[in-house]
Length: 266
Ligand SMILES: O=C(O)CCC(=O)C(=O)O
Ligand SMILES: [Fe+2]
Image (cartoon, rainbow, N blue to C red; front, side):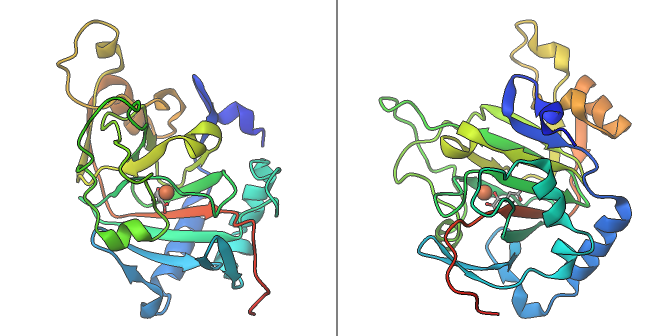
């Protein structure tokens, strides 16, 4: 696989790969996630999650073995290594995976993933599409309310952080549509200088691609930057010509490399 072939038009440090896992693999992984012991789930205000690979504390991983559904069948970790995206990270592949589950209407506030991780993140989407947004901080002199961040403090303390008090521009700089079974890889300034998040909505309104070329600012909806790279014909049609996509329950795998690892705990 040649990763550069999957770079977004105009944004060469973000890669979108449709069908990174097959439908059968998707079903298998979802069965394993749903079969995990109940205490494995952590419930937050606006989604629930599982952490695999160990806990991160003070920028270090207290490692635990990854389960076979991530590194054996299917070998997600090996496949991510082969993309080459993690070539300059310490372990050459992710050692940490967060499973997030979002019901329709749930999302994640704009945040940065922070310095515990090598600045590359690979995210696999299962079952439902979503629209994933990148945001920038306001230029220093602008003043704007930050209160559109609606998650709880607990949520904010987890892996997410925004630079305290720095106002965020609520208008995304980039939006991409993540299809079920796809992979998105974020590197470069989109990791180090931007925030990312998912709006807490139950449907996504997409605007026709040609509407932005005129001066038609009144057309509602988002224009997704990867519209020409989408796999599913119906989804692509909506992304090109406008329309509404209903969200289902989405499960995502956020895969990263924690470079500092403490002694193995088994
Ligand atoms: O679910 C996603 O795609 C994003 C999750 C995320 O940003 C995180 O866990 O840090
Ligand atoms: Fe994140």
